[in-house]
Structures are given as C-alpha cells and as structure tokens.
Image 1 (cartoon, helix red, strand yellow):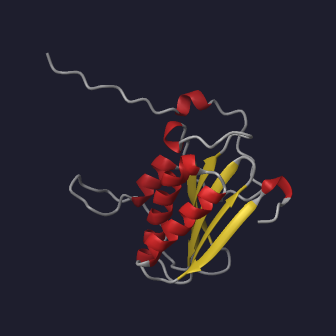
Image 2 (cartoon, rainbow, N blue to C red):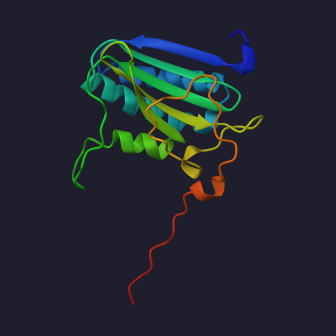
Length: 179
C-alpha cells in the first residue's frame, strides 16, 4: 500500500445486505489488521466489526459500507447503512439473547458514536482506538473512554493529548464472602 501523509492507511468494502457476509468481513478485517501490525487489538476490532455489521444488516438498509483507517495515533472502524433508524441502547433483562451490540462496542473501543448522513437517510456508526505513537496498540479494555459523540473522528482528528488515562483504567476487585 502506498505511503500517505501522516502514515494514513485505509481500506473500504461495500458489502451485500446479507448476514452471511459478517463472518467473511470479520476475516478480511483480521487479515488487514495483521498486515498493518495491529495483532494486539485485532480480536477486539474484529468483534466490534461483527457487531456493527450485524446491526447495520439487521436494522439498516443497503448499501452497507465497512471502512478501516489508521494514522499514526488511531485506528477507526466505520459501518455505514442507509436505514432511517438510529442505533439505540435497549433496556434488557438478564435472559435477553440479543441487543447488547452497542454495549460491546463501547466496552472494547476507546470512543464510539453515530454520525447521521447529511444528505439522505442513514448513518455511520464508528469505533475508534487510540494508538501510542511508535508503540504497538494496547488492549482497549484497559484504557477506554467512551464519547458517544454525534460527529465521528476524521482521518485528521487528533485525540485529546492532555486527558488523564489513569482514571479510565478498569480494575476488577474480588467479591468478598459474607461473614
């Protein structure tokens, strides 16, 4: 792939509006991430892609487009469909078997959001992982800060450099036994 300013790399696919494509798309994303040397976050990104595509195909309308781009300091996934409905969080019971896609995306990516298409029905749902300059990407599950922003990041977006990442780390505490 030719080099671009700021090490920008991108790939985009227009996909059939069929759930059976989700597995193949996940494989294509995994191959791309490995070729870009992002093995350390590939599992999280592939899972997010599967969730976003399943939502777009199940609840959206064609055309469905999947894109990945990365620069020196971030990786972004975008899924666009042309359905008029916006994604929403569902009030789920513990027995529910569907409806947790957005929660999964928010748990795995540093930032995520929805950008309505400006000139027609549809939206782009995106997820972003911040990357340390000159270092391998870290697991998003250890340093996540959701934004739920309406405007997605652009290839020229610069994340806040002065955020205190120590407050965004997830720490699991063991449950204490009752006396």
